[in-house]
Image 1 (cartoon, rainbow, N blue to C red):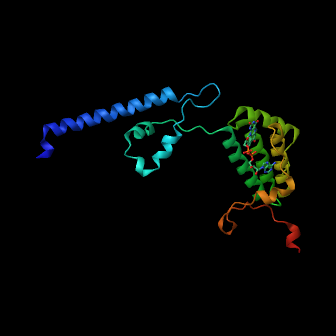
Image 2 (cartoon, rainbow, N blue to C red):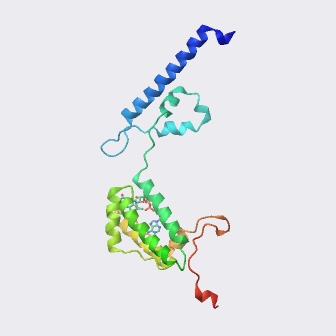
Image 3 (tube, rainbow, N blue to C red):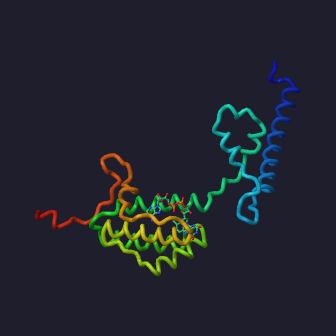
Length: 197
Ligand code: FAD
């Protein structure tokens, strides 16, 4: 029977060894290629190879398979991180209640302070600390917070030589999260004015 064929068993063992060598080789070359150059960019990005991983037609390409195994993550740029963070912050501001609770006001201030300490770009975090010192968080209402955030985003924009955003248009640019039946909205305190209307 084929299963008892000594040659087949030899080939199977050989295949195992080859796979093992491929894995170690790919780990080795990724270690050699991944360290960033002096300007912070990787010497060789494996992004094109990772993208082909999602393309089923390329899965038979053994060269790509070697490079995909054990590959380093594709680095996020400062710009991508910035855009993602501003999207998060402006969406939070869009959902910030008209009448926030005391806890929500505290939380949002703390969030900004933590961001100025933990933002994963040190020069940005250090700069943001100064921005916060000069512009303490204002979060007494939805309008106050979204206008304050627009203002501090403009402070960062100016420092980077970017265009200043017209803050009267902030609600037109950033809306609440698209979420069924407003299930994602933050709830604030009850507005007593509304009860007695
Ligand atoms: P972004 O500035 O990322 O803005 C995204 C979108 O928001 C824009 O396309 C526009 O539609 C809208 N927008 C722009 N301005 C406003 C506004 N004022 N109000 C409302 N919406 C607006 N990068 C650095 O190089 N150095 C730094 O020190 C630095 N500090 C940062 C500090 C923080 C807290 C954050 C979140 C980011 C920081 N960045 C910094 C990144 C930088 O601000 C940008 O995100 C990045 O340069 C990409 O810019 P962008 O032109 O794509 O638009």
